[in-house]
Image (cartoon, rainbow, N blue to C red):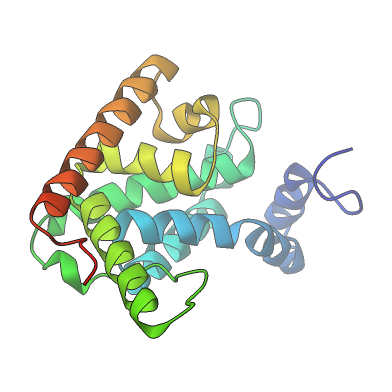
Length: 193
C-alpha cells in the first residue's frame, strides 16, 4: 500500500469537505501545501507570490470542488496544475519587471569553509537566476522534473500537454540553462578565487 496507510483518501476528504467538514479540508491542505508552495516558489522566485499562488490554488479547490476530476489526475497533480496556471498569469503580468537578483537563493547543503560557502551561495544564485530567466513553459517543466522529481507523465498532466511536448520543452530548457551557465562561466562569474 502506498501513500498514507491510515486515514481517508484525498477523494474521501474532498467529499467530506464538500459536506462541510472543515477538518477534511485542513488535511487536504496539510498533505499537498508543501509541494504546491515549492512549485509556485520556483516558478515565481518570490515567497510572497508563492504563498498567494498556493492560497489561491486551495481556495479554487474549496470554491469549485466539482472542477476536480479524480479520473483524470490525483488531487496533488490537480493542485499543482492550478498553481501552474496562477503562476503563469502572475508571470505574464510581471515578466522581467523586477531584477532577477531579487529572488531568494537555494540553501547550500554544507559549508566546509566560509570561502566555499560563499562560492556555493554564488553558484546557487547564478543557477536560480538562470532558471528564472527561462521562458515560463520551459521553466515549469524543468522545475517539475529536476526539483520536484516528477516523471514526464505527471508533468504532462500538470502542464496540460502531451508527453512528447514535455520532452521537447525539458530538452530545450536544459539546453538553454546549460548555455546560460556556460556563458556566465566564460565570463568568470563562477570562477573561484
